[in-house]
Length: 581
Image 1 (cartoon, rainbow, N blue to C red):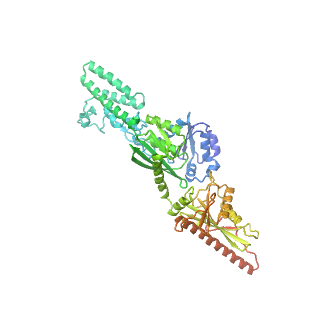
Image 2: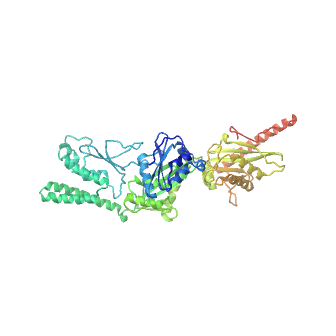
Image 3: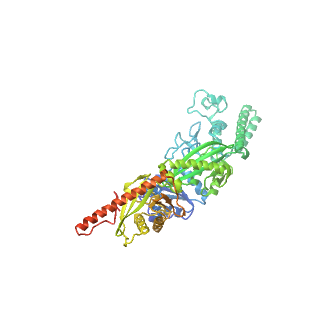
């Protein structure tokens, strides 16, 4: 890693001083206190880290990533040989340090690490960590992470039985039940010497460190059993025989669990992103023998490199088992690398398939997951907002809507109004009123709408995808609504494109039949009069008309007063509600 230096703000110049290489690796972001707050992977460290601090990223409207970047005071990195190593190192470091902005699953610690305690007669424990990533409990050597159900992992209970490791917190004065059922040699009452006890601990340590295997341990036990029998130590030979039987029983059960023909488990994982709130919702359904046997729900912030791929690796690194077949709602990034990593963790081949295009029962099951996820997303929005999104097939929830209306005062003066609705209700701080500047003596509704849209958003930076960030401030909304039909809508869309906002949803509401016009559609959308979404649009349109008419009357009053005093009126070209532009 590079040497860490305390900083208050990361700048492009500081990044150049870091000399991040154009190689794969893992980057580690720290705050001013030196605390690790985010860990990410990259095919090209210099490009990925630089993208966080480039000007276009600062304008992307991603509030959560902006907050992350605002807290970064130092960056370290580790270069690796390939993308697979970057994936694995990122996952291990996230489990170790548990940064605030990374994906964290509630069961991340479950049976992931094992500890052999530093005691005269050591114990084998599950090693658990606190929020700072430090292992708790008695001192000892920690091993892992291990994945339950894989060919490289034995449950802690079976390991204790296999190596006859004591389970008592303190050595009792009399043997406990574990001694009588042959799971412990009772070091508490000197039924076994410390030397003999430590032989089992050292064999266990070698297996946990990867220096030996269960198969090699079995061979050594068989050889020791033969030596004990040859010298007439039949009691010791019987103990070893019982251990080998126990081990054989374990291996048979593991083999049955892993056999492809006997393990029909498959898991379905869907993801739904609430772009506006910067949150991803994930649901998994596990199916065993054709029956749904388990369901889990997660969510994580869409910050930095947090993605479906990152989630899958974190999820299966601590899952009880890893199925042979994983069906997803979309193809995860670096799918082949992910399949290799999951295969190494599980000890068998893992295949990831996009279920949406597979047809039949699998596609139907994924559809069920996505419908459930849609309901989780919808819970955070007003019913009218949800209904409108569905009816108009909008890309995002139209939680923030700006509605434009033109109000004429003859052919000499025209004014415009823009009202903002947030969550289906008026948001007065977002109201704006304008005196049209382009009047030429002839009324041109299209040109006036274009002018209003251009002036309203001329100071709002576009995001990387050409959309706005929503919200209740002075930024671009989720939906721009125009009081008018196809012509007025076309003028507004052209103005938005000229400003770089090609991704902002637009609609026109024609008053005559209350039809909704959408860009790229030849026919308008007709909604029932009782439709909650239509009523919200009508409310916004009527409010824009009221606000514009009030400004119109204000100018008329000023003009009348000025004429009577023979002095020209003085009117600001752009005024607003509580917030002036």
